[in-house]
Image 1: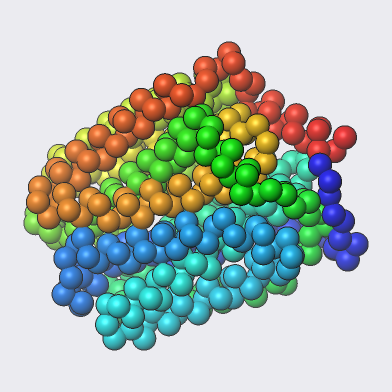
Image 2: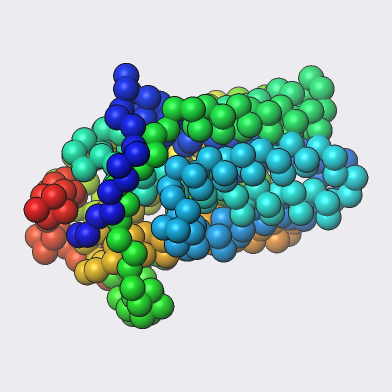
Length: 410
């Protein structure tokens, strides 16, 4: 693959590049889902129903899906580091300015801009890692993922506690200032890229080809389901736990997201299982695990609900790993474009997951939300089993990654 060199790049000193990409992952997801534990409080402030207030999440993820396919093309012209830093700086503005909203429409506007600027940080950081670490990218990618998980967790916890002991406006200001500090650190620590992948010509034709690939379409459906399920459960569980018989305050709701850490800690251990058993079998097992977890949340006892959420997270994160690692098997060319389409499908799923269960909540309560998520998961597992190739027809994920590095360096 043709590579453009950047002579002015600086060497990696004391792991500063790795630290920079971890900070980028942290910043990208610090504010995106932070309003989740604040939703009951925001619903009261703006006199909105759970389905209406969930637009604060779904509109942001729609914006992510819309912007994601274009950031790669912009960075080809402007440079990876330059656009990552610019996006991180711009992300801080609407995050903080959300505190000035005097109407629900204004708050939705600022949340939409948060979604627009987010892909410029996370999608380009993933591209930067793949281009700048031809060897050892897996370790760096794992560090980056830990940054994204930490950012999402800290953002929710911080927003919950500040809202509980102050108010929701202060939460957005604090998150915006943290984003600004992170952007300055990225600017200081991240070297200019030394390598940049050559542009892919005929992008429209390439996209059409990907959308004609049944295995890729099944993979996009899997990604859609993963975030649909994750945001569906973790958006409306806040309303479940804030109501009778739990009556949780925002700070307590923030602590619910500690189950993310359990799922994130277990997921890397599943990598070998995915390689041994194949993505199709691993994804199906992951769906069954997450399905069992979400059914546990129907038992109105906080420790059982928390256990169910932890199990659900573990299954969902394994499912995400299985689906994203299958893209390289299903895409025969222009794999970066295939990943871009996956990101779009993934966040469209999140947009629907934050909004559609609201109709079921209003009519059937938490049981209706659980039934919807369960149906979506079963259907998506059936699609993956029908269209993904069996393990014996594909090479292990680790072998595929190693081969790609060899081919690129040849």
